[in-house]
Length: 464
Image (tube, rainbow, N blue to C red; front, side, top):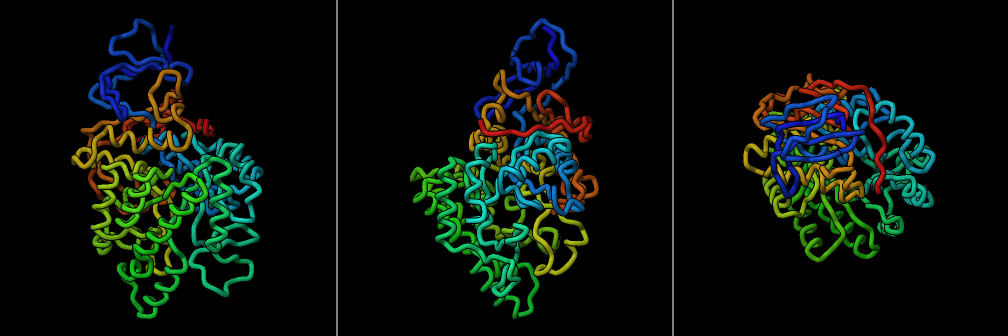
């Protein structure tokens, strides 16, 4: 037999094993793993001596802005950024223009994104209450990864766009955030599909009241922002989501967890057998309110980065299995948009390219093991969203998605070198040790030593 690719002398890493082996690829699939050479020819050989071979990394939380405000980002550049960061599959969020809300928009989005995709991708479907409840079964059948509910956000009934910072008396085309009863109906409808419901957990009513109080003082400092969007805003929404999940049978996924209180609530629910999963992001693990004077407005994100005590509990949640997935919440804006006071500038920053390097650096610092990281960024998301073992494994017969990392290589994160259109990051100037050096998607090398070396070839991924 002639193999398409043989990767030799690397160390294979899975959540349960670490061993030396050669990896053989044929027709885009993993064909064999062997600790002894197999006497056949190969079209291409890669020497991975001193490097680690991980099942392809997955970023479940990416806002590519396509279609929509593509001056900030588009799918071509967001998937380049993902590949540059060692990511082989992304899940794209549905708050595009228009959003992925029904079968027609799903099919249109697949056609729009596929020619631009440097990595494989899944699509989230958006939850708009009564405006698309009848469309959920078709979306589930078509292959959405899950459904996202932007809890507490108002919706424009003509464009279906989210309305941030809602206030009573806004434009008549804006539908106020749904009542608790309406949200519970959403949970019931998603439960019928069997899909995961993912929530952005912040209580808008509480935030509106507290933000108004703080803004009246004239303060514009970062701690004022946190007083307007406190830990309590996340805690009560997560608690309600857990209760609605328990009552409806919906499989809950809590996005971008930021607080100690949420970690404890999710931990208790999991101990009681609740069908809940949770993710957090590097900015909550490595930054706190104490970093704002140095980093500035670029670190404004919703939910906001909180306090050191929360950061410590997030790490505890990772290490004890409460938090089982890491994501980037990649949300690009332009430098001009992020240059202003905290009350007016948008929330979010790019993250898919820096996700793996930051976490690999944490491995070198002894904060997490490489095998644990492989679970958090590969196997766990693949299992949770129904694409395992096609993705997230190194089993023969599955997609040859691989992330090859050099744990000794060092670099410095530079904003101007990001592959995203958005050249901003809270980590500009951060040194890291441990770098993805090759990204392979279904047997094709997309990134090599930081450079994109392949044209778009990504495909839609559907739950099995």
